[in-house]
Image (cartoon, rainbow, N blue to C red; front, side, top):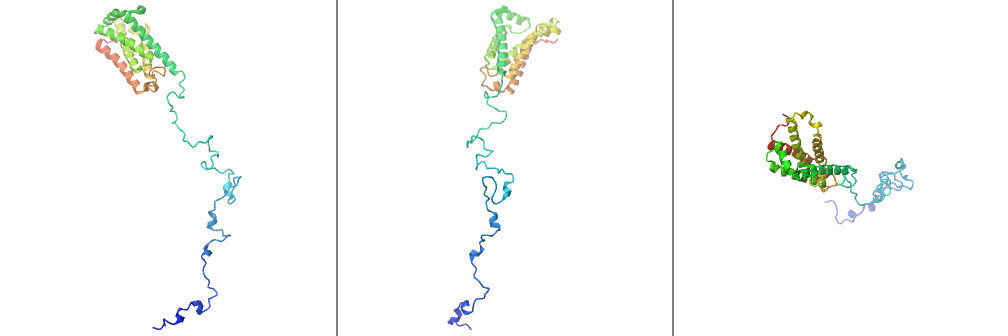
Length: 278
């Protein structure tokens, strides 16, 4: 070994042994920080400040429109704020859907439906009372039974009471606006059967060609009016006002219409069986 561990010169600092070069200097960590006049990346992240006129003191490009867009959640008084400002959520309904009875502007529609219902119902009740009690020159039960038998209906004894009671009940329900599709379907079945019976009589008397001009147009028009009540519903002025078929009749109305016409034809075929067209 050439070194001497106990030699004091081996533990001597370099600056003690030789003078420091002029170019050598210690590194200060604070030298890495930017100076006060440094224009590098650090100053580009500075948040611009707006004065009262809306212009930026740092970058004038923010004031191109001279009307900076305010943030609603920062400045509730901006042009997008809705007075009076309320943090509560507003209830929004889809377009075209409104609650029943609240601003749907039906006008006189319900009044017209009421008038139609009452008119048809009163006519049915009046004709039923003529058959039941002989009022206003009516035939009474005995005369009605004889008339049914002459038209070729089977079981006239039972059919007399069923037809008379059903006609009065349907008329009362239509006036009240209660169970309107069922009542109108029953009335339509009665009227369809009556039209077929009158057409049969007209055919036998060789006057089928003038069927709609000799007074039977009244029965046809009444059947059409009852069908219209089934399709449009009873309206709000009735006991069915809160039911679905009163507010928005659709599938059930078509079903009631088909049921009424089908029941009238079925009664004619099963209890009479004649061919009104020849």
